[in-house]
Amino acid sequence: MDKGQKAWMVNLVSILLIIGIFILASLMLINVGIGAYKNIVLANNDNFQLRTSLSYVATKVRQTDTARSMYMEEKEGVPVLVLGEEIRGTRYETLIYHYKGYLCELYREAGMDYDLSYGIPAIEIDQFDIKLGDDGYLQLTASNKAGEMESLVIYPRTAG
Image 1 (cartoon, rainbow, N blue to C red):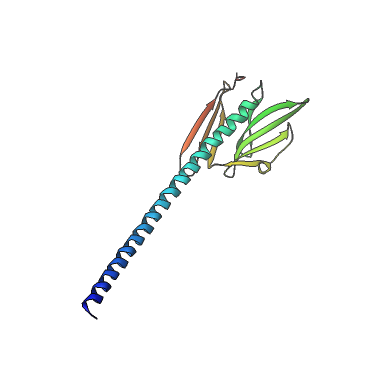
Image 2: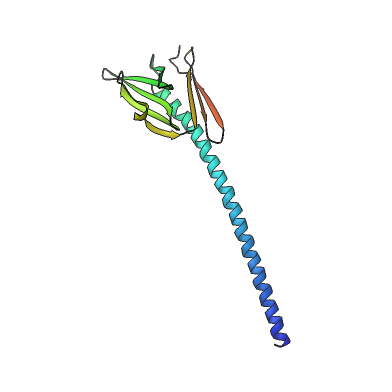
């Protein structure tokens, strides 16, 4: 092997080594970026679940905001928000409660018996608490698996 071939071989190995280091660094950077993106998406999803669960219940309350349309009951140790409405002379109720990691909704004719498992899961949420105050306000508190918590207090127009 002459001197020209050795120089060419050293140049080739150097270039391949630089390209290999560049590829390795690029893969490491992509891996870090994917991890950061995944964490951002998960945090946004958790925040979405918190805010959406509160907004969902607030919207349901506002839709049925008439005199004596809202009360609380307990079923199998679970607090249930009952929102009533009358349609063509028949009273119907929307029941909202937290059951097995979901905020659930059940629509029924007033007075019919029900089981908590009958409800339709609306939003996955770790914990959801509903409290009806003495003066008619409604306090909603939601928390996710990350331990973040959001609260909302609603004062219906027909409270009190």
